[in-house]
Image 1 (cartoon, helix red, strand yellow):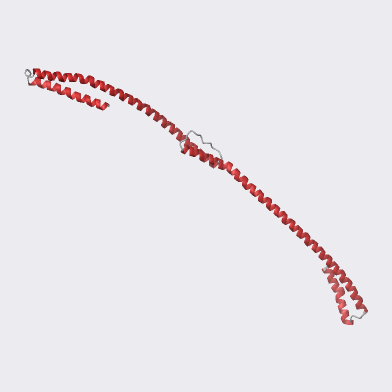
Image 2 (spheres, rainbow, N blue to C red):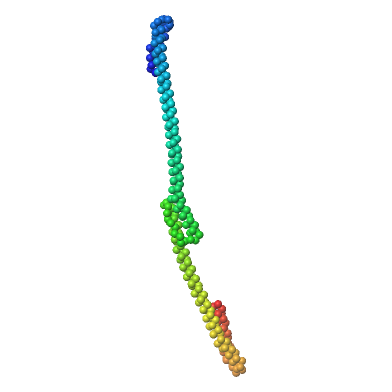
Length: 235
């Protein structure tokens, strides 16, 4: 259209303007040129109109393509958002099952160990870091369980020894009581007979005899004191 307009201006309009300026509009040649120029201009206008129609169609098609592209973009963005949401949900569920569940079990097992339940084995599962922590807690539980069993054995042995010691002490106390009674009775008789001898035959004994009797009575009394102290100690 632009080329046709240039040709029309060069071939028709400018010569016609020049002819009109030279001879005026009444000349027959100028009139024929005017008619030819009008016909050419009408063709040019129809071409321009056709071009405008093509441009309008192209604009409408471009607009339709743009709307289609926008609709496609919206669909793609929506699908991507949906996939993203589903991925986040799936990752959350997977993370909960892979990490959360083993951690919750490990926490429950640790609480059981803390409360004194040492016979429950801790399962080692989950990711490597969780397995490392679970293994350390399981080793601690095993050591505590072994030490507790050893302590229980020692307590049982100590209880048996204590019971045996009490039985031995009871037997020793009974023996000491019987022995003290059996020993004190002859000593009392020795002391009594010595005192009777001193009382009845005191005038016939010399000083050395009286001293011997005094030594015998004093020894018997001191022996009785020692036996009473031994009986008290055994109790």
